[in-house]
Image 1 (cartoon, rainbow over the protein chains, first blue to last red):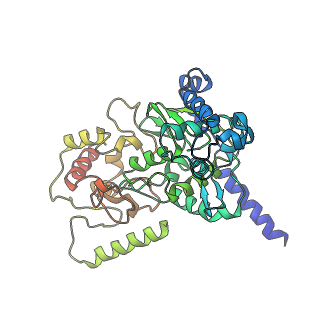
Image 2 (image 1 turned 60 degrees about the vertical axis):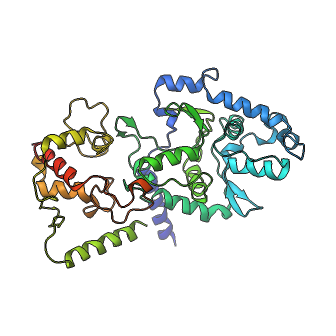
Image 3 (image 1 turned 120 degrees about the horizontal axis):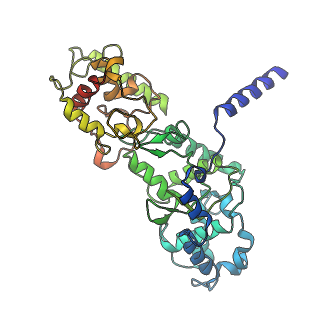
Length: 252
Length: 145
């Protein structure tokens, strides 16, 4: 019985050898862009996060409750929450990302109007939840109910899409560190959303970033909040396991 | 997913062979020997196309002898000398559908519209480049000796 185990260990070791060490996109940025992220006074994402902090304390909706009324002042028990999403939502029986979770709370506990995904208040709230999770190691839940969806996300990551017929993995697994038209290809980690992107001149969500890539390969992007995007987010979170949360980050 | 896409491509290739008489896009070995338009391309237009990042996208992945290389890619072979390494027909097939040679290739299929998924509405059923544009590019690449 020892032989098969030794064989498995060998397979695991060669798989590990084939993979480059995890590298946050931060490492590959110019010193000026790194400095912009490090300095809270220069990082435009901080304005969003501070708006989110104010909203967290504000009573909203017919139920007359603020986030802080349930979760505690200053984020309370939610520190580190951004490292643990997407997670399984019991009520809907499906995985939800952090924006989806905020939306459920607003609807069910606050009875407040919906925030569209790329709206400023939603970006601000998720940026704030990221800010109070800063430095926490990405730790997607080890929940068997997520396994099928995560596996679908992994399959999507390796599926060629669009007129250019390219899969996420072909750039971000196979060619990370090389140059695409002069721009360094990052490993595509997700420990930093919402992010302020210089290219956008705005703060945006991970889903917006994914849809950008899909447009880039001339594919039809999945609509915001689509199940496929949540599944992809599950796999991306797993790929980024262990990296520290950098939200709100700055990216080129 | 990849294996079913490969199977589709193989089936399409088999059908093309069964179709009988040689067509412009006929594949022989690892090459597509005949011009897609029946005429030779224009190397000057080809050079301009390769240099055009939006139209051909070539230098996003390849480095090419086009002067300033700072904003060129390094994911794919340097195009310098490609005319000495490959015949016109070999270049043509690699541009038209490199998946025929390597199912895992990162090279987009510039002529083939087979086995693509979720193509954006503006690009659906359209090749990335026209046969005439591909001939122009083949003509320029063939001069890189």
